[in-house]
Image (tube, rainbow, N blue to C red; front, side, top):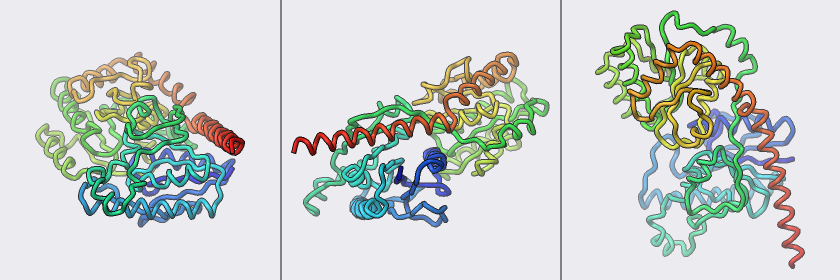
Length: 405
């Protein structure tokens, strides 16, 4: 099968887990299928088969601005990406189009894709169709200028797959889905993960090492983790406790706020900002950590970082937000705490660190769950089944349409 993938970003141009998931899926699909990728232009050098052709009306990581200028720019971007998609579809002649993410490139590629080919859309989070929000407040003005507003009208999605039920339920009400199903996610650990685990056995001999992994922004709850560390050091005498913050900064103001908080809590020698790391180093740090903390307070579509920690045998304490509620079970594969409450976080951390039998049981069950449900092979199999179903539905609808004529 010839598959054309459309994604606003693609590694090494990464903003979050969506791009990592898309690359892993493309890599797996290429074992059986001919896959080409269309993404946005950037300074990065891409692998063969990845074509940076789209334009963004506002590049990452800059926050969205709503103004007359950016509204007009978003319309031009939509028009440009519409015809780019049309040209590449005619050039490649794919059997199926897989739309991973449309944020900031508009949903114009989806409009033309669904007209010409069986198309599957992946829903990563509640903002998957917020691309239609840009310029909405200037709709009437733009109608007078252009006379028609094809790129700001409500969109109908023929076939959607989602990482969680929560993501489906939280989609923009302007988007209509004819058919949708949940396929979950799949992580791609290093092939020598077992060797990495053996090289860094768990221990607590030098004091617990807590790890945060993700974008450094307020919604990820990093400040709550810092406050919880202060509670653990002051009230529970975990004198050798360390916190590693791994990921890139999305908000420099928030980084300064975190640094001030760390100084106030007198944790300068305990908290270390690691920055962005490679995929291999990410798994090495997850394996070395004594405790992984998922403290997100925003409505995540489906977290991947706690799955990556679980497969490394690292115990997890997690806030229940968004699609994570469908995966995380308190006392079974993690310990949960109330998001936004450092006291609750500290209590869960202390319980996990001090209760050896419970920790070992949780780690074992969590790793088994990830191996059975959330590694690449079962995820790719679910996606391929959806692709085949989409193609079948497309052919059936075309046959019925032609018969009615």
